[in-house]
Length: 444
Image 1 (cartoon, rainbow, N blue to C red):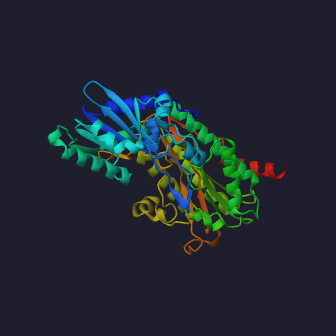
Image 2: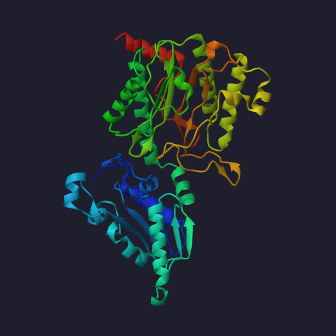
């Protein structure tokens, strides 16, 4: 059995919490991910569906969870791939229904090959089916076929569910607030990611390729037991730092340029997400320093305000105000800051939002508005704080010294009862600290 940072007891508590929100005579059905083919007969690395793993801790493809709530009984049924010694020679061990019941606190497990036979029996007499619709089309089709089969057997006494209800609103609200165990795993993800960024700063020098810095990062992730990054790493030197989702990572790092790295590990299914921008040669130019310190000023102003009870949009407004005022002071924008904000002039240089929820998915689930109003922050939420300034290399409306500079500073932040905790704090982000770290590495 895989050793988990999240205990099987916590997975069971999550299932109980979800079922408690369902009406009597209902069922929640949650499918796993399936294997994705890369090419020919080669599979892409398997990554379990986040909703399914959140409730089960079961890390195999082609499985299905069925949580039944009847009058006086709640039961957890799991359909999974059966044991197959011949296939296990090629692809590795499977838990099978027997292992699922032994190791994963399942009440009753079945072979996935019996789904069409067993599911109508389980759903007989159930009124409502809760399902995350539009996510797994093949299994959604099989559920609909199951319901059609049941309807055809009405004269035999079988009663099919009459309501199909979206599950994600309940499940994703649960995922938005992290437990104590989840916070511990996310601290580990933040720290491992932070140390990888430090390694990249220490290794950087003119003449390296972007993918060589990416290799330093991935190496550290794997050395710490994180087999996969949480997302495709961005390593953008020079002009490439102005491309928000740049992932080619195949250009040479040049003396005098900045390099923007946006990378985070996935630790036991929880994501780190950090961005740092630093000079390839270890020293910021005057223009780079001025823009960098403006972005940092905006981030620190936001972090100082984050606490329970503030609306999500509050820190976005702070970042826009600080960056717009700074761009005016530097002569990059001209006019009254309030007017420039009102007309969106800052968006030519700061075009994305301040951050997003973080958890099992790097852009994690959870609504940002509730009943039309910006959501208030609560303890246990985890968010990123990532202001940036990007000045396109062909922007002739600014002085040449600013062109081609892309800067983003991003940290992972846990909302606590009286403020916030920066989970990625160990990686330097002041100009002096970055330059000192890189100078020390070069003098070794």
